[in-house]
Length: 138
Image (cartoon, rainbow, N blue to C red; front, side, top):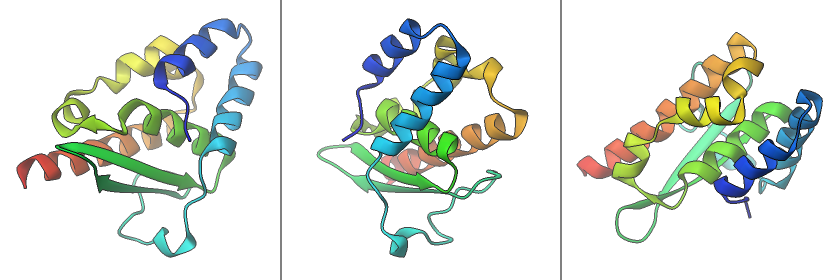
């Protein structure tokens, strides 16, 4: 089970040092449930990430969407966990409208990720938003 996004934001606020914040991101990734290898397919792969990243979207009740994901890199797996916490279980229209850049800025990821990781994170968010937009259109 992933942590609530508000808890993650609060935890980031308590950590002063970026080494501690990176360790926390890795810890979040370790808490992410494993994704079955059979789901690590080209269809579920997020393009634009240097690391291998997979995201699966499943419809929930009403117009909600639930996400699962994985990565082969520890920090990226933690970033997947953060985005799942932020978006999973939300209505598709809220996912599409979600301001990920504001979240990244709020917890400091905007200035502490390498450009490649930041681009990959944006690609993952766009993939999740596209899944939500597809569900809303269906």
